[in-house]
Image (cartoon, rainbow, N blue to C red; front, side, top):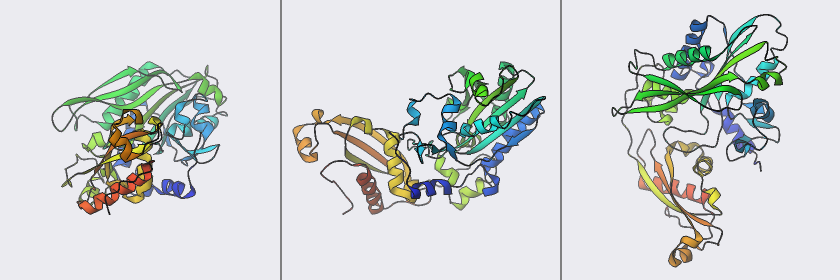
Length: 385
């Protein structure tokens, strides 16, 4: 079943600044995107076109024309943001590619060009220090007519992207690997991981991008003959890439209004930590109508919606335990008054504004706003008075 965004929720989503777009103001993310495209342009010696497209897309372009099955779970409103039966906020920048491919039908001669489709994408996502509900992405598609593209060019593409995001001058010990992966619109799919050194000195593999050869059925869907056309497709999360480049640990810093932080987000030099406010934790005992509702992405999205502009206070939302009514002791059943189908969920909120310390009273008010938005039980347990 699809739930549709309210006009006010849609307005909030569309008013969010795209940090990758230099026309909306200077930011390190647009600088990094420019370095990635320049690296690929130099590697291949081909022109690059950037397409800034509306985040409102046809549902068919977001899913059907990219090879997603009609029953794919990502179509559900738990994961995607639908505006109407046929229009949605894109869940990936790849949604702009079908129209781009359509525009190439009249190209009859030799063709070789890199197309970049950057921007915000909109998802239901968990709340933690590396995820937000509206991250930035870029799709990089090299499309070629009357010529071949294969695994060698795909390796070149991955190497150029890694060098642009983590140049040797910044990360001299970086390593990368490509592991097989399955994507709806590519063949010979790969997941690109980088081995990076964390601030504590540990080494960790992190996903940087996904890529592959453009699938024949995607080309055919736009009237392009796969015997004549070939393509490479790479999707990159720009928030993760910028955090790796600058050594930023908390994704919320990318939109910080703190003057000391903002000044550092005008260039690509390593991030110098600014004084961190202390965490405030609040635990909630919720009643939900089913175990299926005990999903960090679903609850995280509801919490963000309830808090509105105060959602930036949420550093994390964690499910600590899920217990069906049948598993609770009699005293808890009596206190919470669960029905047989309901579940008790222990939820932890980690509150940490980036620019100030919360008082206990403020934290309690935030806790109760989230509680009222998520709780489905007949008994309320509020603490703010």
